[in-house]
Image 1: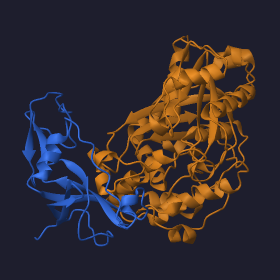
Image 2 (image 1 turned 180 degrees about the vertical axis):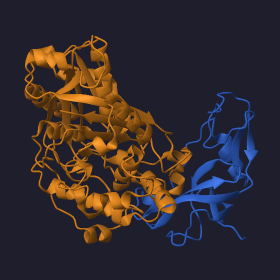
Image 3 (image 1 turned 90 degrees about the vertical axis):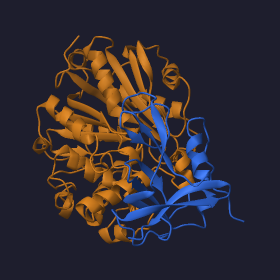
Image 4 (image 1 turned 45 degrees about the vertical axis):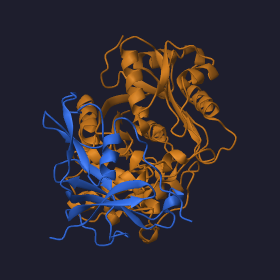
Length: 378
Length: 135
């Protein structure tokens, strides 16, 4: 038993498959490979793992999926299963793992996710939204477009700010050898990219990717006892959810990131000004702008200045998505952001932020519906 | 030949909504607790009770937000792009996804603009859409 206080639980290992097109690989295989790398990174034998928390694949649903992953890992864990919360699930599962570890219900947990929509089926991202399909209301992108349009009405046109976000992620991804999309982007190219669901341009939208990722969670005391080489302390965790249907949300322009961030900062005893580097869920560029705003990095509607002139690029005042994010590294919904946060805190990132002491990671799912926040330290 | 529009899935819960539309009436649900809502559901999401009534909407609404699809995710929309899909707020409070007719490409749509109901028949389905209000 331990208290769930800042630093008492750590991320002990991280691992992933390659990103991009992985034809012929099923999601169980991708999960197992990612877990193998994560366990090797932590220097832990798999027999020590007694909990397996799995985010369900987005593109297909299977009964008892978490148990199938454990079976393929050759594990019979105390705690295990699959959780569906869209892209916010990864950090949520880390929080559940941390809570179970703190309560003494398990000692070492794997948190993993894999999917193969790029070579498999991407229909989930293009699906009809219930009976509103009679209006032509389809896809994941559309709900974000609706939010972005309302945001522009309340706070003015954000095209240049959103372009800065896309340019930053693409610049960072361009220097990441593992990134799926390594072509950098200019503002002019961004503004010239075609509409998908207006006001979303093609270059506002994240990638569709195959791949898997995993992390190992344990208490700091166990990591110390086992000689884990580079454990990274979890300082803060927060979560929140708004309404499922975007059309029913009381406000389209504030999100659960506000309460989620507040919870994580309160636990860590930190403020936005303490954050040196951030990995912000960038399924669409508007998500990054609104998440940073809801976290309190700038006053309402003042994001354009915050992200301008390379300020969220490496070397800027708050580098964001330093491995390329969903827009460039991989469209995987969120665990790659946790991995990059860990590398930044270890000091081993490809684009390392010098002397970074605190990294903020956001996950979100649905249409800015579910939110989770992680603050990592050193 | 144009592909058929995706058809609504009629359930015991939402059948009164679609039946009313086929008679030229847009309805929402209004609960004795004061809450009003769409889309159809069995229990009031505010008080969790079932003391609610189908209630006729005035047809007056305002535009809350809008999008324009430049990609067709279903073959029925391949020759409609670019087409708008919008979020309207009924004068009575409930919000719903819809289209605004007369602004197919979305140009000149303005958030806050006044709209009125126009029910259109396509294939065998009556669809609640909106047009710019006269005033």
